[in-house]
Length: 402
Ligand SMILES: *Cc1c(COP(=O)(O)O)cnc(C)c1O
Image 1 (cartoon, rainbow, N blue to C red):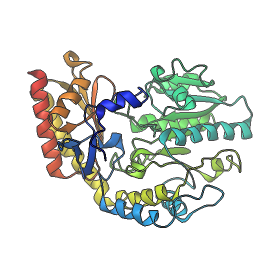
Image 2: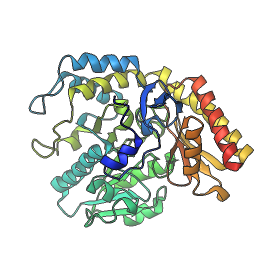
Image 3: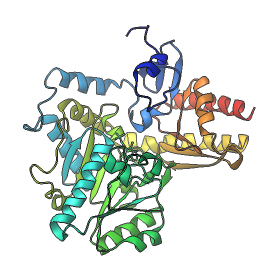
Image 4: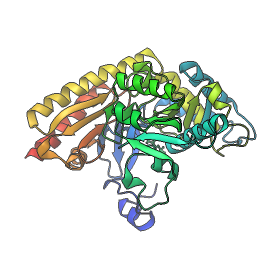
């Protein structure tokens, strides 16, 4: 790639909706990244919970290049082998009977919300259209998904928003019960709120939400775009509680870095997306599905899932030690390898400062809002990379408290 191009060109040629960090990565291997200047970083950001097997995993390179030599794209006027193989694996591994493929989390959620509306419309009539979602939730950036999402800053100024949507506080069963009625078509939630601050829902809450959905004949939709595909130590986070949704969405780690998403559902619900009701040109693309099939084969094994739990223990130990040593974090929360370190009272709003200092120390971390430092590393990150990453975080915190 041309060495003449760099970070400053972003401001010249790119729409200014992002503010990328002040270096441009050019190469990755495992949980390390290198920038244009050859500086090396420990990557605990994982492409925002996407690079489930790190960078340049040999099995994914093999799956991609093998498929690249065969067939790239046929559109949905034909089906293809990698899509059928991946759908079959997802169905066998989950509650679902049927799969719809798309290319991003927002699109999988768009399909989920449209399906819920269509299901209710077909079975109960147009008045049963209320979608209930949670405050602070994140479901994507399309107009429907920012409308369902519970962070007004993402929908403000794009009005009129999609109607028929109510928001209730996360983990507040009484608030949900109060707004639910026979007009409710679906309740949507993240089993672990990701962007909203890395907040796992309790098993009890999920069970009560399921019961309310059954009572009011509403669908339960789990957005597992961030929490799914092994991230929490089970293939999907719902498996911890045993509470089954009617619709589940997966993206991010599903492709390990290749854009692909899926909406999973039961046969009875799926039939309401009849021929012609919904679609996607790229959805089910052979390259994407070949890669995701390989990701699933590797992630859905006891070695990797148990490894997530072990790595969680290593990271939580280190983070808790730093929390008491520096007083910067008030608590460490999350599940598996989706972790949030909550800024203590006097450090509120400073998660961004940690991110900047960490990068200077050669470490990539994320935020989940202004008050939470978030980690979402590779599910197979080496112990040595964890140790080195924690060393660099310690250096960053030392400088922060200075
Ligand atoms: C990232 C995310 C999305 C949106 O996914 P995109 O691929 O950016 O469209 C939706 N829901 C959750 C829970 C997410 O974390």
